[in-house]
Image (tube, rainbow, N blue to C red):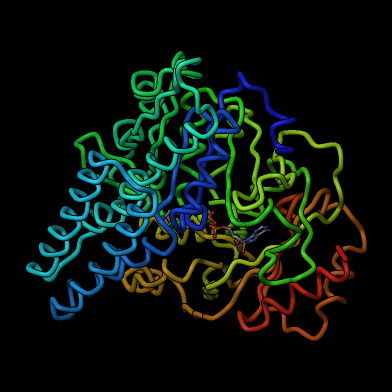
Length: 467
Ligand code: ADP
Ligand code: ASP
Ligand code: MG
């Protein structure tokens, strides 16, 4: 494995495997072999591919439909996990653990059905069951992989695989659905439950995505949050390296699903990768690099399906700093424009507006202003809050445009390079651009287009700047 040449046996490694890397018994075994070869200290796993969506579906069916529909969805979830358990030839203790989790799932679904209500708190416990179940299955895959790598246990002390409930360590606040990790507390808990002195003799398996409050309620970090969990764990245990194992061989110049000519990037800086993640590259959860940057932990993104490929290293400093490195697309954007003549030379107007967004915990992505109006982009889901729109309408006329996406060009020195904007807009000259943001970041130039034209814009830019 090429990766091995850049890591050393003694390195403390946290490895995360995403949903597709946990898709079935074969995927789990392949991922476990990677973790074994990398001599990982802690393995953080996602739910089996597609299970989080199915659990969210269970919550909806249980609330709004006849119980028989929920039963059907529960049976599917059970079957997927039981098939993997059989294929992995799981041992009885793990099977009992899995059955308990399946029972817990049914009980919660029943509760939701009886109450015809699913709070965000209940949904977090329900969603988190995906990771709790997959991690139990992964225990067996890990045990098998270790046995394969050192079959003669009489010679060496066999490495022990230990299952850790992530909620014992990953302490969060109580913002269910998007809980905030409490770094200091997590560090204290990690030193108790994940002592680094056991590196070499133990390999820990835990769940991504989930945490718990001080009171012991289950929380989640938001969709795709397992990457972030792994980074938080890496920071807490003082890891030398964080590995994100996924279904692509690293970070590419754009989403390979959008552009067949996308190329893998061997090395990228923390700043550029953060911009990519924030502006829509699903390969990393947007917050993943925060802990890695805080502790200067290099991050490897690579494919669990082809571990021999080099992958992408994300580091504080990289030698190659091209003007344009990559392109990203952030879908489902809404443009909110607030207009009022009162804004003209009125101190405090923007403060009032931003305070409303702040009070509702809604973050704004891109902003432009004129003398009497301000336009902002938000994620679609945020706008579901009608009260927020009502409050804004107290200050100004509110105009909302939907079905948009933010297209970003990411690289270096972007705001100081003459001619770049011209080159970008020549490339997309036949696409209507609704808003432009340039100047705030030296790593990013982004603009808003209709969602239906987003992929085309990326393909055109990719042709001009990368191919
Ligand atoms: P996992 O389940 O392992 O967390 P995700 O589906 O969340 O995996 O993320 C991997 C996907 O991210 C890839 O399959 C790819 O389609 C998408 N992606 C988006 N932008 C990029 C990019 N620039 N480089 C690589 N993959 C990207
Ligand atoms: N299973 C969770 C999700 O699908 C978290 C993750 O996979 O990162 O969102
Ligand atoms: Mg992901």
